[in-house]
Image (cartoon, rainbow, N blue to C red):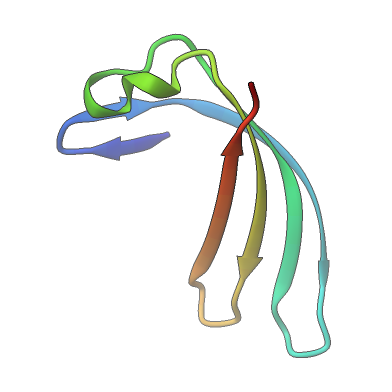
Amino acid sequence: MITTSGGKASFTFHDIGHPNSNGTITATGAAFFDANATGKLAFLGNVVAVYKDQMYKDGTDKVIAWMWK
């Protein structure tokens, strides 16, 4: 679930990833948001997003996503 002070959105995701030689993990996948998104995140209701994800050894994560229309 994604939450902000102005809303929430629940999702399920599926991805395929692999570790790089520098210890990071690169993945691509799709996120499926349910219809119950609220507030500032309401635009995510019933949305599918395709994304790229970079997970670093220090636990941080960078995600770039595109709404599938």
